[in-house]
Image 1: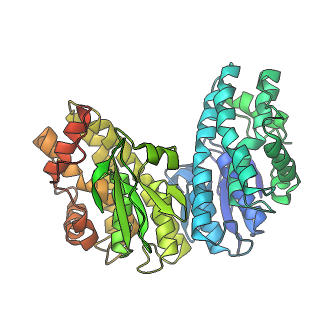
Image 2: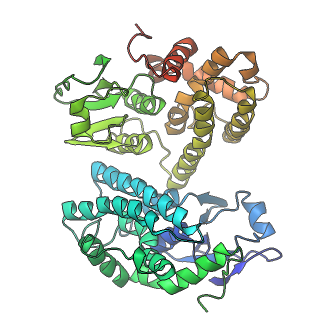
Image 3: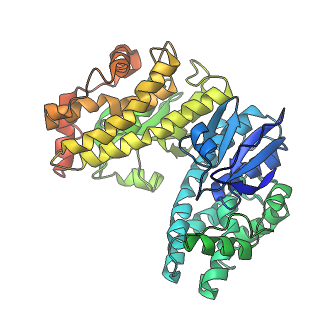
Length: 240
Length: 240
């Protein structure tokens, strides 16, 4: 596993037999989705981190879109985090992350799709160097829907008694919610009473082995975001 | 099948035993995706068309988002055209529309996802009452990618020797390309030499029974779009 992010002038890391390769960036929430799926299903893989500010020539040659996450399988890169996650779940049948029933699976996928509204709102907050607490309200309104859904499902996780696809696909941004408070102060605190089930869910997620092994603290996320906002993303030093 | 679009003051149509219900709008390209999948797989279904300008009270009560397409299954509406299409393909195993191999399926899904760039560009053109030929160029650039992909695959359809998920998911907007020429004149003509394979593909698609039974002529599409642009979408009279 290459911890350091490879940039211009670097060389690709040779593939190891029997492993699949994930091209990633340590702080990318979309890439985190794929780490979680690979870890939860215990699939042998290696990770090559890409410096997204100065992308390696070999990466752009291999994959002109130059995006992460990308999963390198049989000589091609597959991309789009939800498509990669579904691919892995179909290809590796151990610990299926979706319900077997097609209708319940469709409802899970609708839930994941709907979370993109939270992602877009959070992103608007992130790219703003001066955070405005006004922007928290619409995020919380979207999160209400997830609080209600947990109540409706009556299980500790969206996927039941253990985390599944919905849980892993929304987690990366939930992990970063506390970072918003670290950066913007108490006006960004998520109200505990309003999100009792989501807080309980979050506590459970933090105990999940897959979540644990790719976790960053709110302070680490905040430091990375600040370096990113300053135009000098510090890919390598924050976790050292 | 209710041809007329139901609006405010209407009543829902009773469900028939053994049929699934598609809530649709005759000129909606996203809904067309679902019609094509249901027709291609020969699944007994009925269609209730919704007047999207004056949505029926019963529809909003049943389904507050009020969107189409929606598939009513076991007391719930599922929505998002790609999720509905995948659901149908999983639930009804006859004539599978995706490759069995998870990697090839993922590549098909990436291709469909990438087509959303064409959709967004076309939409920008649609909402503009005065069409600017400058906007055709980026659409054709995106379409180049599909022309190349057909060459790479070496088959008449993206899915092989007969249309599959990729073909049906992109068709509705391809059907409407000729409408752009009808409305905007010859400056919007798609160059035949540049898209030889796509023209051949289109000819094949027009012979497909599913495509045929939900087809509208470019002139019908144009008349609907003009009524839509004028703020008075004519849902009911164009096909009569």
